[in-house]
Every structure is written in C-alpha cells, then in structure tokens.
Figure 1 (cartoon, rainbow, N blue to C red):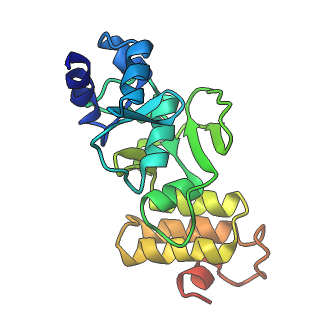
Figure 2: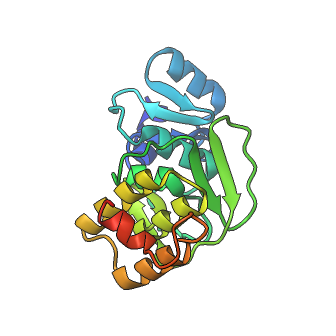
Amino acid sequence: MEAIKKLNGISAYQKGLFTSRQAKRLGVERYVLSRLEKGGSVERVARGVYRMGGAPSLREEEVLAAWLSLDPGREPGAPTDSARVPIAMGATAAWLQQLGEVGPEPLEFCTAERKQTQRDGLTVRKRAIDDEDVVYASGVPATSPARTVLDLIDCGEDLSLVASVLRDALGKGLVADVRRLADEVDLRGKKAGIPKGESLYKLMAEGG
C-alpha cells in the first residue's frame, strides 16, 4: 500500500515512529491512519505519535514518542538544531544515557521558547541550553552528563541518586572537564546541607 511505503520512509529515521503531522505532510490523512491502526499496520503510542506495525518496541520509546509529540512537524533525518528542539533534561536525560539508578518519569524536557503540553507526566520548561551542554542519546537531544548532574542537584533530587549518576558518568569517561564540574557541584554544597569545609563533589564521587 502506498501509504505504508511513505510511512516506512519517515519512520526509518525515527526508530519506527512517526507523527500524524509528518504523515499528513506526505499526503497520509488521519482517516487513513485510523484505518491502518484498525488493521494493525500502525500502532498509536502517544497522542499524535505512531509506531509501524512491524517495528519493535524499544526501551526509549516512551521518551522518543514524547519528544516527537513536542516537535511533531520536524523533518525526519534532518540535522537537529538544539536551539530549536526540545531537549531531555534531569532524570529523563540521565535515564536515556543509562546513568545511575533513576527512572525517566516524570518526563522532563526544556525548550528555548515556551511550549504548552496537556499530557500528564510530561513537563516542559522554558530554558536555553548551550550547545556544549547537549548530547544525543538514543536519537534524542539531552543535557550532557555534567549538566544533568547539576540540574538534578538544583531540582532537589535525592543526593544518593545524583551520586550514582555522577559516578557512572565519571566511570564511563563522559565528563569532559571534571575540575569544572567539581567546582560547580561544590558551589551547591551549602544549599544541599553540606557542612562548611566539606566537598559535596567528593562525597558524591567517592560514595561517601
């Protein structure tokens, strides 16, 4: 069927997923998607986001689907401009990069411009992220390990969980400037309740 061929073409760039807006741009209307869904050729995984029937369900599917739902008109396969697309952050970013023992939910993204969402369990913050603080994990832009550690501290995450993220990032060699990160973490020590003269970074990095 011509519609399936078109959808395969765009979903190939997005791990088997596509949005209804992307489909419409190719001439595949919603009523066609509805018919394909009833026939099992596609499966809806989130509002406005579908998976091709033969595509496997992936670990990161929920996060990828949420990311696509926030930027449904993006051109599949086109270079991603981190200044214009949603970026996974916080625990969601850590989970995508398989750092620590945190889960991805509630899903959290940031965008340079304000973006509204009514989906439960999905938070979108207005925030610009420097290019140096953006990495790509499973095809999704995410805050770098160092930025993620700092964000988790700033949002009040359990320090033992943040420590596990930090140690994994260090162990995998994913922190480009360890000294800079250590200084940034220690600046947050007082707010985190660390006694004067003690290093929050050292406590977390060494598991103390």
